Length: 495
Ligand code: CO
Image (cartoon, rainbow, N blue to C red; front, side, top):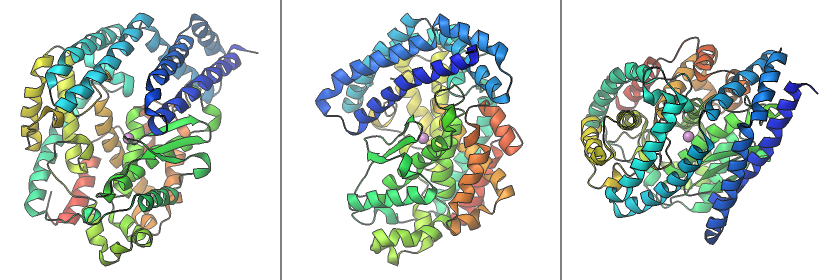
């Protein structure tokens, strides 16, 4: 057996352990008895430590080097390209530093939970400082050209830089801040999704229905409940989603489900035979998020979707018989100045991200002290969103990301939104998207995404993929045009 074949076998062998890890993690969040947490954390730590040691072993390095000489096909060349990228990246971090990182982030998460509960930033601050020190050391070891933050950004969105974000953000921010002001002057919408008490079993039925409509394969997946909705791939033919129900807010479970469904469709479209290999994954966090946002916002919050879906909704919740399509559509698109990122609408969402990006970048470059964080957070909230949190639990303590040490992750959400709009405009050149949605012909839309994005998995860098799919590099004008087109129609104002 040649080195290339040996390498593929080795990846698949390691992937078996990763599958077990994913299943245990899924179980932890959906089924596990609460008292089993400590032992579960122990098992997960053992498996992930083992997997990591295998991925960065010297033997693995030698196999990659040998296999590089053998790769002939485009597929194998892509495989080796990403094998090399991953190996070199992880190899730069010494195992002791990874271990320190996992210990300190676990402590930080517990401190964050307590701090959020008490709304007391000082409980979290010392832990955040420690995590930040480790993250900075990692960034230094990973290396960068211009900005230390780039080393972290590159982890989640390879090829993205602080400079590129700083070119993108100011005009987008100006547009969004202006759009919110114009919309709030005319907006007066009653949220019909909060009008009644919605039975949980019926909501479950509705969530399953919409997943089926989108093309999610329940023969190769399932839907469960967890505190925070997520999607996980256990392995080939096993891509699971979770959702969460609120009896007073139908929108919450519905759009969470559609969002996770978008992630799951991407995962179900990745070729089975690539699973476990470096190419058998999504192209990046932001490309993944583009798929979930596309289904959640571009499709799920469109007027044509509600034209199509209203009869299905009424079958399960007959009270909607008296509600017209426009009210459903408007209720799905209420724009509000809100404090909480995860509850933000499409127009304000990116403003929440810009704020986090600026703070992260400043922290990582030591331009901002951890102690100053709540104050600067509140100032920026006032400036960008026009609302200031009264409690840190609704401000700087709302997200877990920094406790996890995932600095550089937040921009993926914004990039996902921007990509989703750019992909939408490219799709419209090939398909009458509105008409297809109105008729419930989602297989054509999914087919397009499968061909252009899902089936390519991680054979390209995200920037390369978006250029192949849309014919150009990332450009925020598509998102701006998408917002203008949609919200001018909803609210009858020029944006
Ligand atoms: Co998502």
